[in-house]
Image (cartoon, rainbow, N blue to C red):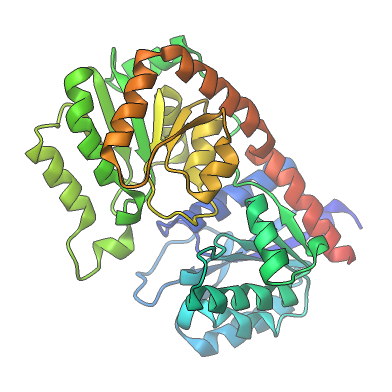
Length: 391
């Protein structure tokens, strides 16, 4: 079969929807196209129940209404009549209708072409009834799939042990990241000047902002760090998470802004409160000296932010959630305690006082990240698609 005969149909959220899975899928598609422009790729976009009308690109050929059960049958029929060779599911529990997205199984059971499923979440908490329910969904998805892709080796171990999914069906491919040149200190300073940060020591975090990200601990840490290092600036890149912004609770993002005001930290904490383009994001990361991920969710099994930070040559300081432990290891960054501003102060202070530690960690992180740049991810995923067709 010629490469030009390979036709892939994705089911995912997709830009302009502001969602991590949407951005991932777009980058995923672009990487495959850059690797082999003969591969035909199309998207079925998932819309949430209260979604506005979106101006999707020409890649989007059909849409799924998340909470409308009958729509899943219509999408399955569309897939079967599309002429696609492989159906690629980007799976996240909250992306689909029904309790924990159970509606997706109704769709998968009716699809007649090979399915490759990408698992963005795998439940890890012990002794949880919901964990068992969610694992059952993953097990059922795997039953309909030729292959399932996980972003961490520990995820593969969980699927083998607890879901009894055959080893041969599971492929580990780390979250993709941009393939950019290693930023020298001189290049960092040039970028800082471009972004009005000349002479500043930069710590940053990015992504949709919600309580689980733990940014409030970073803000509290800056109260002490800014006194000791007045040239230190903490960049919080991104806007409030759409779900939290609409929730019937105090807006977490607004509370962060109020804390900065209360602590008089407006010169040391800067909010870039919008969804950044890929180019903007990469430039901000390349000028960063220390990348902070004070996330609170211990079982988190994927993180595009850490993958991006490492691939752009950063010294990562993170809480030891599962994906961070796998990527950072013992010598590619530093760990802080969960829910502890003091721990952030201690680790960051030590790094600032010993800049060689920053340089050593970021070089090792960058070298490790070469294995999961988008070109490498594209190479691996194309091989999985081709194997799925033959199996």
